[in-house]
Length: 401
Image (cartoon, rainbow, N blue to C red; front, side, top):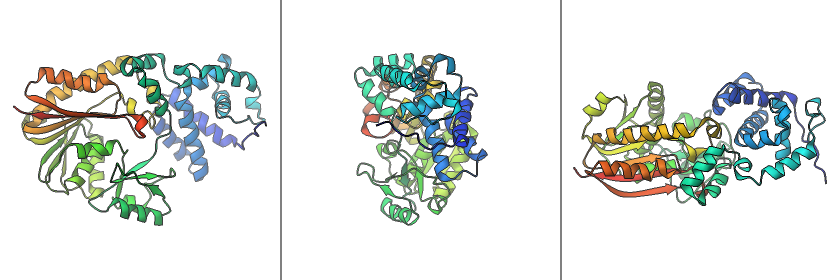
């Protein structure tokens, strides 16, 4: 039976196509472009906002398939591309003039043919399919398929102020339903995506949004109360906050980053969370030298390709390049070689990335250990997207000299 066209509103479709233009013609990141679109259309209700976000992210995720299934003549026409997207989703086209040039039967035939070619069917650039296949072998196809699923929203209960069980009950009273995962004791997974920052529970610092895989890093560090901990690539501080909670605000955490704005955001989040043991420092060679041999624990969550988090950042695959990944690997080696001097003898360093490529992960650790005989390998863990959450890598090293 032929499907009926879904009820569409031109205003919403126009918002989607204009947001896509900002991303693919204007070079904006998808999250910023969606945020801008929703701000410009503040009168949209929650259903409208969800329609815009879901369709923008969906088209970004499947951008290559959308383009190659569209007749070449019309690929510059974002309305036409949206028509192809509707067909990919299995929906019928509405009787609009904008879609009158689309031969739905021909497009559907192309879609079915293209889906048999992995790099097009899974919508990634040629070079990335080649790199993933080279580094992960037969496992690449499985992980790639998982990376094209929508990411779940995971919260971390801030145990400085509450527990996961108490937070779940409080959120339920606010109309937010969550589920638990026994492998992640502080995590709550949202059953339905929704805006969280206006919730009183968020304003009180009872939780942070943090993927379940990322929540494994702080426990991996073998933390004890009273320790001196350095989070040397802290960004906006999600892991620093988790470390503070695990240490029950007893000890010292120095959270460092090269970008001042991230440290400002980190301090704001720390204040809200009641994480009183965090101090921020902008990282530079002088600071690294001053802190030489001072850390009981050192976390290096280094810059990486981000291939493990494509579910939540699908536009990254269109902005990445093989050259960028080679450059970031050089940066990773510089960081682990230079920053490791901040660890004291007997201390433990955790090297982490949100990549699934061995070239950014265990191969970097091996290279470091070959050049730095004072460190010994303890263990490593690969967390793959097929396990249900973000792809992550972490390795634990001990400094002996």
